[in-house]
Length: 118
Image 1 (cartoon, rainbow, N blue to C red):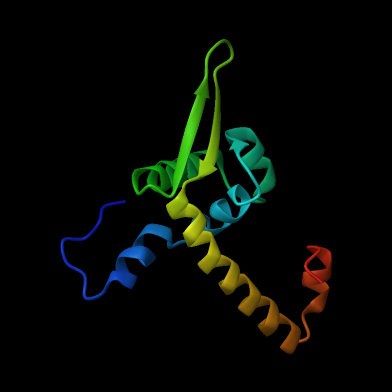
Image 2 (image 1 turned 180 degrees about the vertical axis):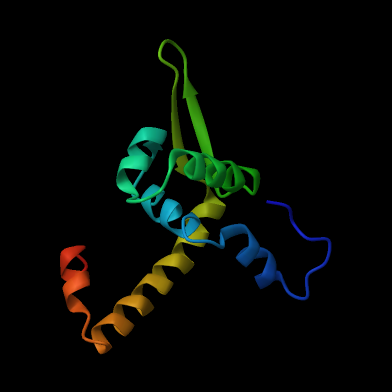
């Protein structure tokens, strides 16, 4: 993902960095602790490995996520949130709570109960 040359406000840049279906969910999962690529893939229903890697690389590029690599065979990478990613997670958590309120108001508690959010 390329950052545009011009923005009218900083919110546009933040939005460009975390926009899309998967990036907020990746950040949400990493807020629970570091994950290997395979653990992340298992925890995010419907994401392809190609899409996961692409989004992780973009989040790495913008300092939201970092990774550690272990020596030996097989090589193992662990992804985790940086301080910037943790701060971004705080905003995503607020968005999550708003979504919960809307779903409750719309009588969609069945979905929330299924996901363990109620």
